[in-house]
Image 1: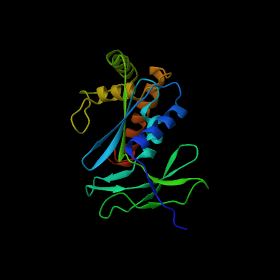
Image 2: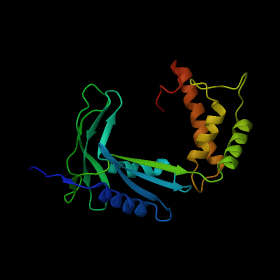
Image 3: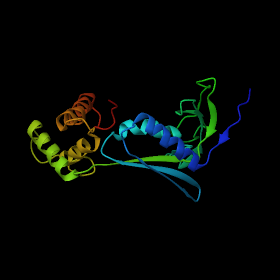
Image 4: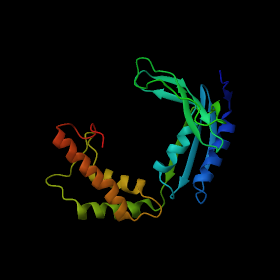
Length: 210
């Protein structure tokens, strides 16, 4: 049986995104804006504090109607399953020949799921953090108290200050109800463990998946 694809506008897609975010995060205020431009359209989601980007992206990215492969500079359009509960799952994605994104196809996950193509090629999530300077100073203090770095201040492979970059990651990824101490342990200690695994495996940090 051939299932026809229903095409949604970017405005219709944005409405679905708002409903899904409200369902998962009822106490969080989001700004969901759609925009069209030559060659496509996208949705921008922004909010301040509250839920982490890592919590929002898995939901929001399900409403993307395209994928982009930087290996061959190719954008491909995808079909998705729109489930009765309002969530979305990838249904079909063409293979990116000469690129790094494999083709994908799945059967309907629900008898009443509808095959659609969303009007937004991409969905971008932008979380803003209030009182950034205060929180970054607190994170820096924790890192300097708990971590000992011998010799000169360590830099990453791009010459960036490793300690400062870590403190920014802690602040950026800190949950609303999470203490700075808990965020430090989750983000920084994970990074230290990852770095040690790289050294033991004889590879450059960043090339070994945790």
